[in-house]
Image (cartoon, rainbow, N blue to C red; front, side, top):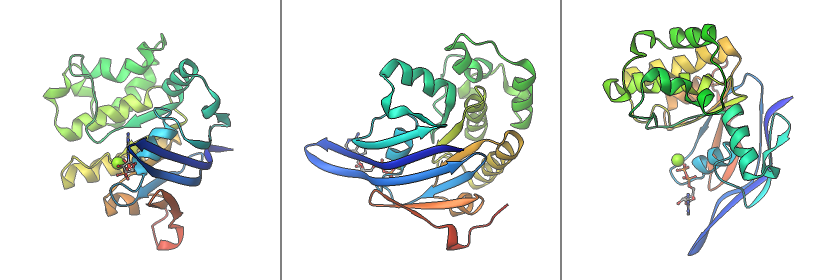
Length: 229
Ligand code: ADP
Ligand code: MG
């Protein structure tokens, strides 16, 4: 079963002039795949992520997440589906500043009135190396540490897919490499399906597959010599 499948996914923005941000994208991800999307600025990468995350709606085409057609869900159902099934990680971490790291990680569960699984919480915070940071506030952490917290938050609901938009774009080389290694670790440990948008060639070559976005069209670079792990 594919975790993500899009059929002729198209997005046109109409603010004055029409921009074809995404054109007829057929994209599929199997369970446990770790893939990178590369491409120039403005090529449509974030648009694809926002559509898969259910935070924006396509102009036409279909999006299946675990066989559920999310383009057919109403707004409320989509909000719940998104919270339970999709983890999103951003370049600027997007943590809530006035609650602790601990609460930030649990937030997706709290919003859904779900109890935490303490063993799982301990396991992910251990893997991500943030056990000693749980009572801090986001601004008391470095960028690399904040991104680890964001990864923990994305994992807490055991989502079908994790979508990351330039997750190392605001980090120095050392932290970028650590975060890249953590994505692989998480992918292996929890069989997480992960899509990473990146400008960083080192991130891209560490993935199972690489796709390139060019003017709203998605091309597979499977043959381009990326490493398989
Ligand atoms: P990338 O993430 O690859 O840099 P985006 O997906 O953000 O590219 O943008 C693709 C195209 O869509 C660009 O031309 C951008 O200007 C346009 N675009 C993105 N978001 C909007 C929006 N909300 N309204 C109008 N145009 C947009
Ligand atoms: Mg972008």
